[in-house]
Image 1 (cartoon, each protein chain N blue to C red):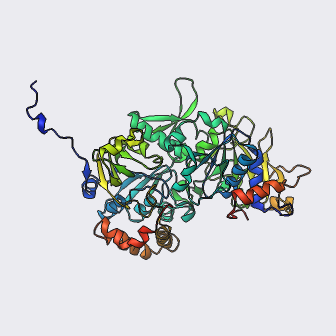
Image 2: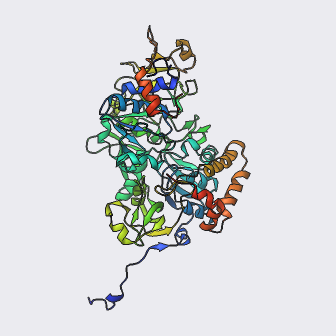
Image 3: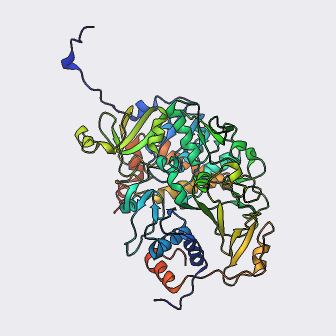
Length: 306
Length: 263
């Protein structure tokens, strides 16, 4: 083995990519993870991009408590199956309106599970084993209504447990505060369950409020929650209308606007308001900047934490 | 001190939950659950200095806060300024050892006579639900791993209190009997109280059938019976639910619930 001749020119590869580079990896029918938690930290720039590309038949793995980003993917017809222990917006929408009506009409299948089973499934994928055992859920309806969850006798002590099957993600999409150019991602705050979603994914793309220097990341390496993103995407206000800890609170007025539109579909079978919402905020704007212009700079600048 | 003030039903419900909590216990304060939130904080401030209180996925230090600000959403990052530690969500849900000191509060779409409950949906056929519920969230696991839990609902009617849940997302006492949980290998003390705007209920020791424990002021036994879809165990004499003391009400209104969510 001879030493490479060009050691002087070896460069560490930068992983800053464009939104379209990440979206191009998504194919119809894939299993896609979407990070965040209820009204915070969803990769909305990506979600709007997926809808705009007309991706179909996705198995959408939301966060342990998903918000209306999953509802939006359902409303836009991208999701065939949803893996999420909750889809809603707390007081803003206790149950996601599109989720509710699409499930009731049989248009979307639910992989029924609770938060602990959700993480057991991701952990099994991360560990490359077919399932993780879990105790809670024995004696409930979960194994009856979700045949993928099996009741079994553990071979060590003979106890009755549930086998929660691995859920492997083809791609995870996350939103975080910062990354360096090399895919070292840090959050403001705890980052919800995003680490577990990352660990279960073949590929992880993270949209961030800001790209920072590697030195900035090295000030506190313990804060690096995602040490190996496959690509990072610049996304100022990229979680809008949801909050981005340390940057902005959720835009309740905008979320309520969506909820009204989705509720009209759910309650009155009137899709027109939802179509108008999608035209205005998803299909219409040419890119993320145009979306932010559509929302308006005054609105965006009003979403202060303090 | 407001010695003459009369507690509201929600304040009474919160006080019931508070009185069950002991110093040193671990409790979650969910968002948009004003009654359990107030109950937890009342116990913490008045007799639970060593309680571990989780707010917005943090281990929060609010003991010396003059007024504990309320946040509408569990994702409100501003609540993390009290954090002594973060509960990274997958760690919180995967690490179960500490939960034996935990107490949990759960809501439900349906509850049966053994305290089994349902958040999945309404309908006999899972593939054709009449009403799709929010989902089980973390309730299935938390009702097993914590030392006990309370079911707290903001309405008391026959839609909630049903002979049989269409689906069980959180196990109570199964089909009855004090060994209903242990024979399935489940730790945890199961449901203790069911707290509604009309009354407090608990479970009979041997059968684990739901039993009327106390009636909120002004409520009659028949009000509960008429609004419950199964036969309750009714003791010969049912006391009135103990109202908060003047001090408890004062702390609740001046430090915990300044915004008046319970009034």
